[in-house]
Length: 178
Image (tube, rainbow, N blue to C red; front, side, top):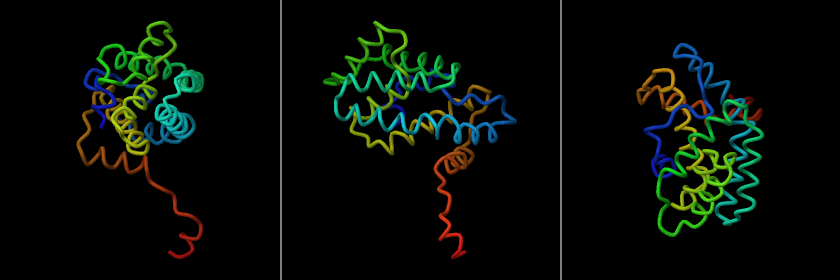
């Protein structure tokens, strides 16, 4: 899924998850999950995917701009660099008119084309549901962030980090039954 949505993944650097170093990866991951992912990316990605499925170009551009405004400055720049690389550096799938329109917009406006936008639009073009696409985006963030500090994550460590990303806190009623 990640390769379909982010064909440039092998050349990408860190996007919005930028750990301080290998020794702080777990701590930085938890902070990123609680901050950027929970407060910005999750809702933005679901909106972007919905707009892509509706083929609503104006709404998609508006959500892309809102994402850029909500991300921290460094994350905004990295998101644009990697998103524009994926958008402008690869030929869109045949018939993916929304991607073509987004490419034109990104060519004309350097503030358009965040990675999550490209990811959502490409996911929709390949009929990947939003939940699975968002999981693939979080996986890409995890692996690319770790790579940026010189870590190649083994499968078990990646699985542990991803489990933390999608762990659901038990409801109070569930706690009382334990």
